[in-house]
Length: 145
Image 1 (tube, one colour):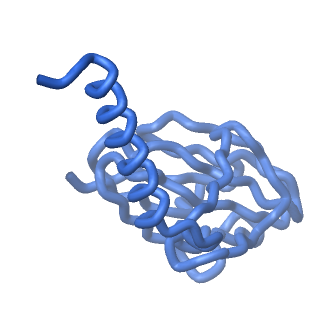
Image 2 (cartoon, one colour):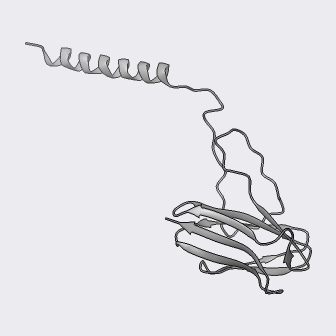
């Protein structure tokens, strides 16, 4: 029969072995440990590009460019799965306001600056993104189950 002290010593030894195994088996290389920046959906930024640090980062941010209230290259088609994060930016040559229908998000856009949009795709369907000043559809967001 084991004494209480030997049981405690055995438990401490087992814990020490588990800690050593965890440290040895963990890959602590810098490219595996990274933090992604958090974004506030109400934040407006002047940056139109994102820097990728590894293959695990989010895809490049789509930038919709407006000239005289119309989308350059036509209506942007953006597709997301339910629960994903809708992400895009709008850059315009004139001041205006962008409205994401269905999600009821409206943001001002300043000429020459990019305005970022980031919000959860928590409603399924197809939604229009509109330049309020020109009335032009600039993007169509599809959220699928």
